[in-house]
Length: 324
Length: 265
Image 1 (cartoon, rainbow over the protein chains, first blue to last red):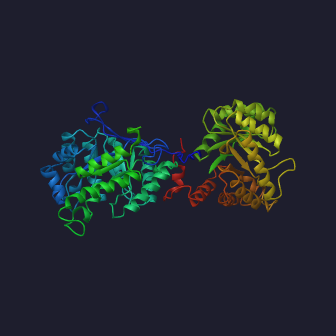
Image 2: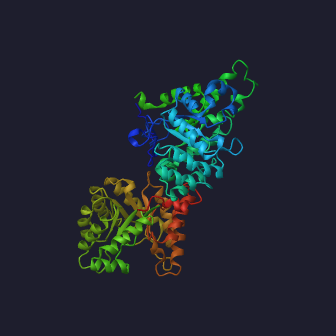
Image 3: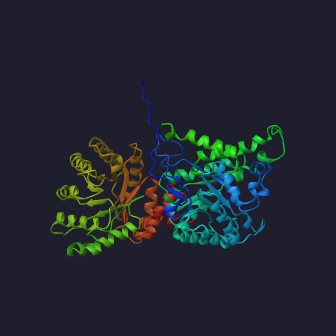
């Protein structure tokens, strides 16, 4: 009988471990914390090395603007979309490990809400649910720099994950995260070189790399996912080979991107019929999540409860330690 | 690039004085500065004209160990010094160096294997430095065989094809590069290939330029380690950049800084 050759890979690097949230004992008010990262091998390949903590799901909540969500999601969330507290509760009901608050209402084109108003949304969510919190700015440099100090202070002690630091705009968010002891998301526009550059810039500005999570920018199934996959894979391979500036956990914006696809929300066309119309959105979001998990994603931001349920099942099935 | 810092060597005036006067601060400063500059290991050589080389070497090892856990390359041509010092070096260490004559090499391989140490093997024998690439490959292959037979893993073996100054041996840099290419392909996994880089420019003008140009050329042929001065920033930048061009790292605008990230402190 011929022996089977050992094809397992040996990696010298490891994805860092990041804890999000703080319980009362740790100076916060969360019911529990969430730990991501720690893999010393490619996703789910336990025969190569440690696979680290299983990926987790954050449910996306906006401070305002729920009425602009696709009709199907508006039906699913119902009245909860009226305010961030109720919205967050719905997210926890749908299985959220964390809540991701996106401060869309601060965007100059969609409300231009103030730092104080955004801070109120943060407090409302902290009071409504006890899962850890991700706080995401509106993406406009000047406005983010204006609101994030107030938002960060409102969640001081809660060990949130805050985003995003970008190549041309990172100093303010680094300073507030350091001051209020939050974790940091570093964003790059689907560019591995910039992903690394943002991390070295933030590290040089004094932010500990081990408290950083990479957001490489996400694309949905059919909308550039191959490119996203290969960027994430390259980053992860570099990290596992010992590149300390790419050895951080990765966060993916799954729901937001999947529900921009016409397959997820447009009126019936081609094989999308009135009868199966409502299956397409959850399916699109599930498939997007599944692909991204396999290129190395530790934290998925999602929307649809069926997609969340599917993704949790997949994570459980792919995680060998659960059955070993 | 595995950089073995060359500055703790009695050939340099500052180190020579410090060894003679047992001035620990100077040595420790040299150790720390080389590590901060990106060295992976430190060469330790008491230099000529020391009354008791064994004693001086042990003092250097103890002095350096007080400030860093870096692997130490114990650099001596004397077997009695090497065999007495190696078992007393705490932590990682490398024997620098053995010649390729079978009896000598077997002795050094055994000492390295017994102490979990690395070994630098020179591709020279009783006949001296080979005048061509072929003989270097032959002696390198001999070192690989002896290492494998003696239980020394390839990641612990560094083969040094011996670089001579370009002003007196103009064909020598080419011979070394050819030998590096061939020896790299000789074993799987391959041994490390190392050079005492600064020797290429002994008594030449433009030493820094010659060193860094040759470093990049030798790396292109498979050199993955070098004994050099890590405090020569331009030289280190060249090594990092050559590595980048060989896809050893992912580019970013601050790649020189990124390559040094985490080395300090």
